[in-house]
Length: 224
Image (cartoon, rainbow, N blue to C red):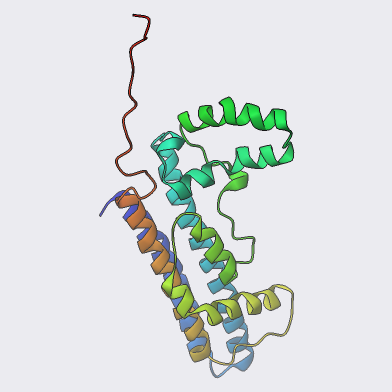
């Protein structure tokens, strides 16, 4: 097991242990409806927190790995190169004058592509503090991840976010039983594990780099 596998596994493990502990508390509180209801609401909010938290962790782990290799941006695969260029493109969109465009494409872009990649914090993947299925899908697409488990559990993930927001806003959202909660927990964990496997696959196979990037050719000065 490599270091990245260990980091992913350990992060999933502590989250799953916490969720399991809350579920056990709910089961043992069935005879006390007030406590039972409160623990299920807490479990729901915690489940969402771990869904968002792990997703962010996995994204950051991958982007930090790419940065740590000091890869020139031109050697990145298309999706990672586009993500790396997000900051300069954002600046460029703020001043799209002909002079600024010419300067960027004449020299600025080439200099950026030669430099070791840095993913600007403002332009990294974002959960938008509400990790709806479409947000998860949109951000994962930027690193070439498509989740079949998200497709399978889309309705439950959407409900997980919506009902968590009701809890966060102090509304009287109830979870009827441990069995009901468990359906949503399973859906979220499947998406999390699927993301983990795909991120590890990208890291292991260096899916963020261009395959067989051509070596730079140095030509002699024609005057010699």
